[in-house]
Length: 214
View (cartoon, rainbow, N blue to C red):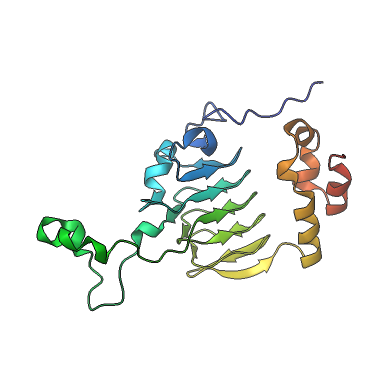
């Protein structure tokens, strides 16, 4: 029987479930990058991910999402555009209100930012997660429902809470290094299709043996 990879270019991978969208064919903003097969699930309007789930995104910082990530309903990314001055008596952004206040736009331009927000490959986000600006979430990480991620998450870390704290790591330091070296998310689609069961339920030894050669 011929093994056929799933199509990473379709908007709705489950035709009878419009609540699920693949992000790569969905996003149009040059400020958002999404890897193949990463998906968002929302019963209201999953196709509005760019405007409902990526907030205060005025640039130039980008949101970079890896491959094979799963986003539960209500996951939101707060971008650097939400920043306000905190070095004076008021944090209110007077210049954006216009009028003569607009003459003081220099007071809110060039505010310090934390850079791009980066999500690695194979990251699972639970329901209602909030990610703050400039955070890096490592490959294979799991973010528990309702978490507010304010700091970087290590590869294969499991975090939860507000602010999110490291609960445990899914593998030892040595095992994480081996998994990163295998990098199954970069395997050719046909090879990955052949070894899906190993990727989902195999051991690291089995995964290493299944890796493409050459």
